[in-house]
Image (cartoon, rainbow, N blue to C red; front, side, top):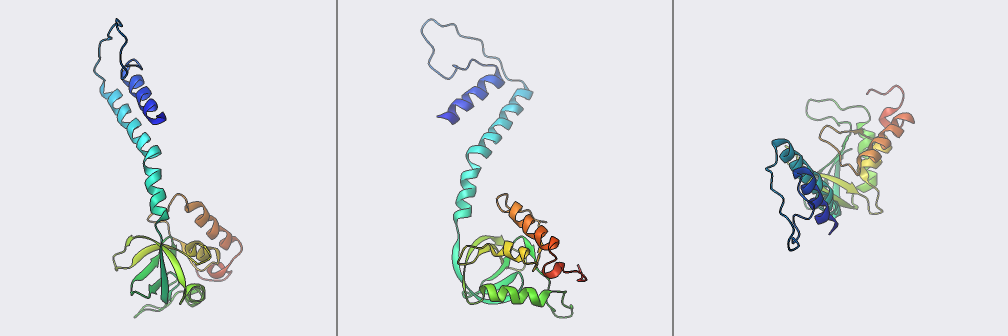
Length: 200
């Protein structure tokens, strides 16, 4: 009801139409001439439509997406931001970048072993809740992950200084403040890879 009244008001204001145009006219009332909207008014009307869509439709879709979590058991932790599930899928945690372990001809990065050990202790052979968000070019499933007691693992890793914030691909609006604060606190307190004298 409120949404339809708001749309009617916006139509009337932008097209300079009477507010009761969309209602039944009373008998004997004079009809006001219709004026075609200018391109500027049409653009404003289109913009208003997008704003209403963002306010009334997108938040509902986002809430539904956030509620869709899948309970899975972790089989093996690969490194500080990657692990395998019992069903064989490989998971890459979103929003963080943990130091890399030695791989092929590449040397390992500082704090990689500590970061991997931290994640192993937290989730290996345990159940986690995952919110999936597509796959990367290596076929890994990208996800936000929570422990059985409700801790966001991505955020916990940043807060413990086991990884850096990775925001190159954007962060969810509802999680971004907490993720940035977690990394800021770790840097301020010189936790993990932010310890004095460590390579950045």
